[in-house]
Image 1 (cartoon, one colour):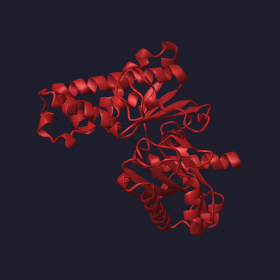
Image 2: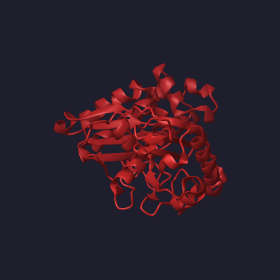
Image 3: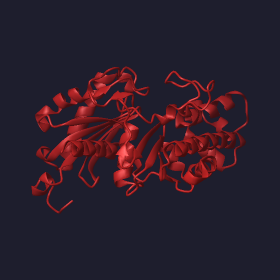
Amino acid sequence: MSGAPPGGSAAGAAPFILGLDIGGTKLAAGVAGEDGRVLSREVIPARTEEGPEAMIARLVELGRRVLAASGVSPAAIAATGISCGGPLDIRDGIVREPTNLPGWIDIPLVSRLTDDFADVLERKPVYLENDANAAAMAEHRYGAGRGVRNLVYLTISTGIGGGVIVSDRVVEGESGNAAEIGHMSLCHDGWACPCGSRGCLEAFASGTNIARRARERLAGGQPSSLSALSPEAVTAREVAAAARAGDPLACAVWDETVAVLGAGVGSIINLFNPRLVILGGGVTAVGDQLIEPVRRIALERAFSSMAAEADVVIAELGTDIGIVGAVAAAQARLAEQA
């Protein structure tokens, strides 16, 4: 951006976006310019048990606070972007029934937020996007995927989601729910998944399920340093730390995790022939302990010709990716309509 103050004369040439991120554990909001730099941000607990009405009210308050804190004039806000887990109907702006948001069934979120921000943002456009697709757009525009035309983004957190960029365009599908990579079934009679299916990648290798598998082994009486923790304190992060220390139970859980993730990423390479597979989400905070074995297994599993063109890397945008993803999604929709 230029040196003009936010909301000054440069704002018309470089509009700002209000980005909102709705997750199962947190709500986040921020204001960013066309360079993706977040000027103000705030994160609060999601408190999903309160239901959609209370969460939406808190999200609106959050958006108003970050807008005020940014110093950007509301007149310089071109649009609001929303990043949310699916399934969604992005064309009609409806949150259908995300597995991580209990009670969110057919919520007309875009029309609600258009109304709720009308006094400040004068009914400027509001765009809804699948969170993993939004994150893929963010990494493509501002992060590890800059300059790469074909990539897949995979988030490994409480759940597993995906977004696919082909020839510089996100793959949306009929209603904007394409690339639910976490719910590709790797085993027809495998692990039960909250989505109602079985054998999903998410049901085995998400952070939630890494911890679950460790707890199940502990409950079965297998010895481990993790037994010193209460069951709720056994997280994917604790499993990874115990595995680094050589704990046999944790090593077994971790080795299984990277084997399944590696096989899944290898299949993704065969399906989409990407230049990059970008891994993000909380579980990737362990760095090389995850990325190195997943990369090795994935490239071994993929067709050699496609493996030779591909790499598996860690996302660059860190904890801001939800906000920046919402911003990038809104920017893309504005560009389409220009």
